[in-house]
Length: 138
Image (spheres, rainbow, N blue to C red):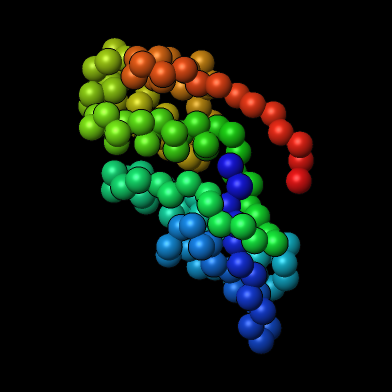
């Protein structure tokens, strides 16, 4: 999952905005630091959207600079989107999976290194299958 970002030189820093996710604003002393901070800002905003049960916008914008999110985060965003589409809450997923609430909380926690088999099981009880693809590096 690749989100485009705008890098805007401003006096002594580089400002960063993400056109696909309103509210993502950060900065860095140089391009490398700005992009590193951009990833943190994007992940933080997505965490807030998930916590507020808001849909997470998918990447659409095209720019010169991008922030790549790990595949595990993409899977968690997809699970969240599927839950919203099916009007399910975490408690519903807990019941469907027969798990403890903390286990489901971790499935949607972007900072937690969830196991792939657990994500697959969550998708399966929602009538979906998780697939993984490989693309050329850009």
